[in-house]
Length: 219
Image (cartoon, rainbow, N blue to C red; front, side, top):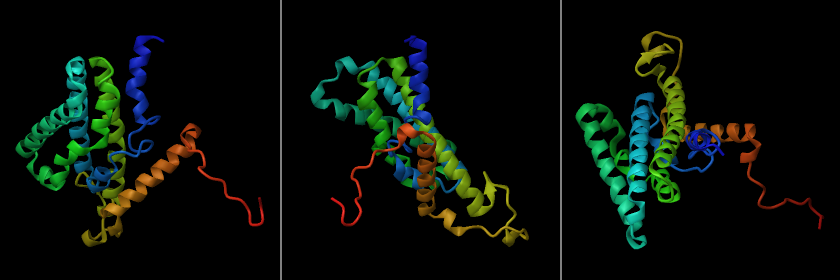
């Protein structure tokens, strides 16, 4: 296989074919909590993309020098250090959004996607491939958050990035906002619908039945 093709596949596959949320069902907690508005979804997406890409590159670059006994500790330390930097940058340049995201920026450290890619890919592959893998998984995570945040803000508040899309009755318009869309359970249902839609369109992602239901009186 052409090396360029392999690298391109590493970048593109996590977008849909092996998406960390819709297929691997990782990082769902933050996806539920930070998608109330598109702005918070965008900031969280950028934070995760930055952390997973740089951590993959750093871990890959020192992979030959990591003792197996302390490998996980070092990986978590690298990820935590990057999260601290991202958190401080947000507080310095986007303080209001940082407050809206609350503890969830700090909890990027515990995001299974980031540590999972470090352990499954970066520790076994070169720096360039690891950067592409981190970027691909970050983008795969990001587009789900952005889609959910867009739907929730439009139907929950009638706005998108603060711009009025559906004039609400409170402002003299015609749209009555669906308050349920601003609650975390709505994100759970939207993500569930997206998982169903993607797996329905991609037969290879449909899981096999774990058991077979037999009719009454059958063997």
